[in-house]
Length: 269
Image: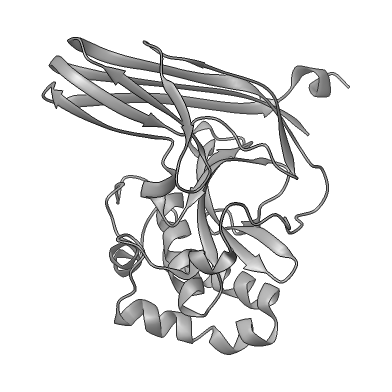
């Protein structure tokens, strides 16, 4: 499947920002199940490119002159492997055991520990089926509800509220799976879907004996050819498409638009 992606982000500020630095993970992964055919970033200044601690492509954009807005545009064409969801055997830079660690956003409290324990026997007996049951149970416990959490909301808090969005679902799922000894990583990326608000997405990947497999709690399904990976880590903070810091600027207003569609050649076929 060839997917055309257009991701535009604009930050506007109430007063001039003296200096800002943005950490951009806006370049899709080249891997066994997805291939970047074309990709470009349009930025207000030249950015340095590097790999972060988890091997994600990252651009560091620093603006050291006063500015009232930051305009970011990422776009291109990515080919994903057709067919049913299947494990990806490639581990990346680190052994799977690294993704048994918790983080500031994925620490379990007593309620999460008890919830995970309810699924321990099933996951031990049949990992895939048991993890799918965990996914469905979480989706029922905390329905997708925009505007109820933010980027700093820990998994335990989102679970207690019984509400959340895709990043909360991914972090709560990762917390539970790690408690049960299953290496799990948080993934940010794109999803080809009818609704624009879900095109920028997050899900979890678990390490099964056959490889890494994506679990999307928000949509209650396994990740397939509609999913494009940008970055991964222990939690949202490791894989966020855009994170930054600034000096000055006052109130910030964010405008973001993401479109993921089938490439034109496929829609005409």
